[in-house]
Image 1 (cartoon, rainbow over the protein chains, first blue to last red):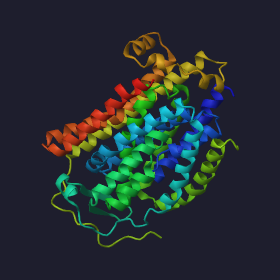
Image 2 (image 1 turned 135 degrees about the horizontal axis):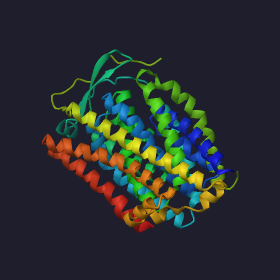
Image 3 (image 1 turned 90 degrees about the vertical axis):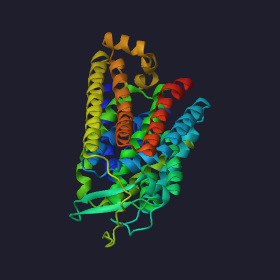
Length: 284
Length: 141
């Protein structure tokens, strides 16, 4: 394919991936990486390296809006990054080793399985805007993990306080490994930990997940970029497109009901994960 | 239909807020970092396409010249020569550095407000990020 046309198509696809990633809090990589492999015939390691760049662009674009609106909880995000960052370093290192060992197909199959797993996890997100209060734990109290945000949908300020920090750290470490290994934001795991373990309101969980995704991705990207797994000509249009899509998405999120977006997202991810697994098995 | 619980969590006196300027500065860091990165990436891409009018997508993937620009001297000489790949590499490095700078901002504000535990957490996150970029990645090359 002509390079200019290839770049244009990459950029357009990335706008859509960035929009979906932002609205769902999952990051654009979940959509963009399989599309790179399936539609653009990109090799798995390069797709993963590009995915990391996608996440960086998405998180910075949406993070700016969420931080400005005080929707992202910086304190909680920073606290949990102590688990996601080492996880991402381990995950990215594992990807490099698997690629060196000519196990890119296994990586693709594992990625497809992770994509499939995101579907029930996405649907498992509770449909409660503001959760019932649960007792805060010692760590949350010591670090002051809580705050308040203004909910545009409810038209009032909503206070919240974190709980159950230890299980949240365990889930966040796993999210870091998945993020570094497959170049995705692993936002579904992060949001689940923020909602279910820490008991945060839905919008704070989504915005804080976006905030954290960037730092986690920076850990994985640092390893993959320095190891030569990011192709700049492929990564550049993807970064530009996802940043634009993510920015539009973050403008809409505060006044949107997220469940609708998630339901639309499920069949797309299902189709992509099946296609990716079949390719990994050499059947597509 | 989404349900809205009528008994929101009660805010404890233990929760502490960062100063409003922390949010403003972090927003600025994110916007500036992303803006500079995107300008560099778009500019580098245009220079690359202009310099390779007959290139195909397959030739791009089979030839990734980024490794030559991942050292300070290599990047500096590439930029001085107007290399498209060097501009793209700088854009990618700015993109990676943006969240790292956000951690630095957090470190500054937690340190300034005397929160030792949060300062230690932010410092650990920063050290780990730099370890990946400057040590682990190059070792795996």
